[in-house]
Amino acid sequence: MPNSIIPFITFCGQTKEALQFYLETFPNSSIESITYITKDDRGVEGDVLNASFTLCNTPFMAMDMEKQYCPDPSWQTSFYLELDTEEEFDQLFIALSKEGNVLMGPEPITTDSISLRKCAWVTDKYQITWQILFI
Image (cartoon, rainbow, N blue to C red; front, side):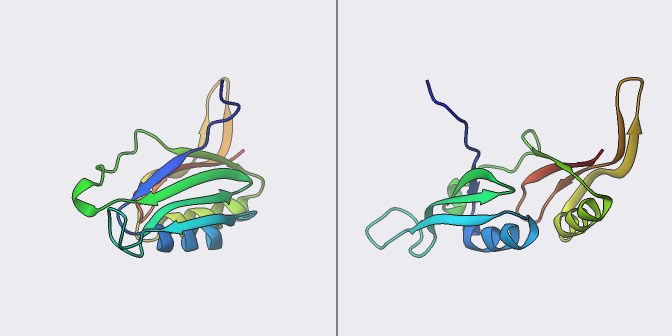
């Protein structure tokens, strides 16, 4: 049995740009390794064949895919992140929503069983969806 699940993101020729954006946006983030497509590989030479990176201490992998084979973006899957301060929430919301699409919030959510000071659901400019919360 595997001992962990690592999210894997497919981009349409934007992996290098997206990684730089995420590294600048999320704390405790780094690139572990990048392998580029060569002239002998299928795909666009110079695009990312695969990349291992960390966002907020969580491992991820990514790759570029030729535009004609790229999957349609969907917010069916999203990445969930709880933030410690309102300032962190606001900074992340601004960065992710710039050139992106705000699906919900930011707004408080209070029910009998939950109380969130701020909650937002955002698809960023790379078509990756994030749920961010300040509890």
